[in-house]
Length: 180
Image (cartoon, rainbow, N blue to C red; front, side, top):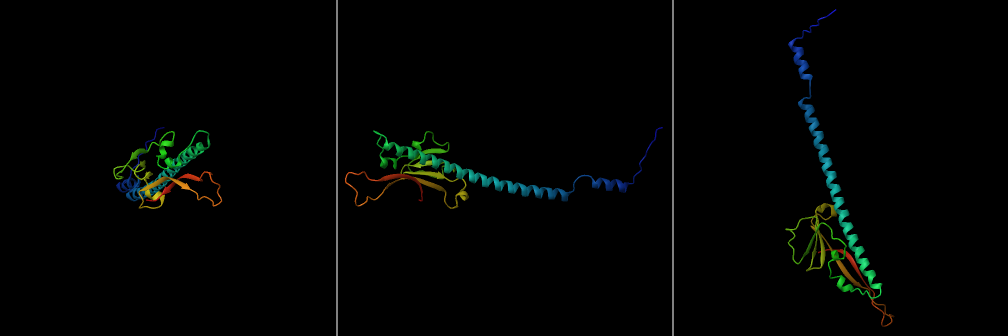
């Protein structure tokens, strides 16, 4: 037994059913607003993590230089391996590393920092300072500062008054951040 079903609809019910299909402009606007908010939050978090990565990279390079400086200072206790600490304070600290960082630009006498890309290291031979050009200034606190300066400092401790003659002076070398 075959049946033929014929559905007669009026034009009004067809138009009503057509309007209910799909999303309207209001739903599209709400979805676009939610997507924009989520994109903004994602970009803010990415900027935060990029700043944290920059801080960690700078701290790692500084730790490597300090470790190399410690190895240089330890050599002075080996027989026949005199270390001139005054000369260490004049040298480029990156020369002590086994391999220089990928973002090291080299040595300059009077660099124009506007020509150098941010996020890189260089050694200022005139001031004997190792400089890091900030990529994300807000990450390191002072938003006005454009660079971090590090210097090898020679320190001599004062001699005690009852020091026997012929005793070597107590001195050391440190690698510290300095201000301009």
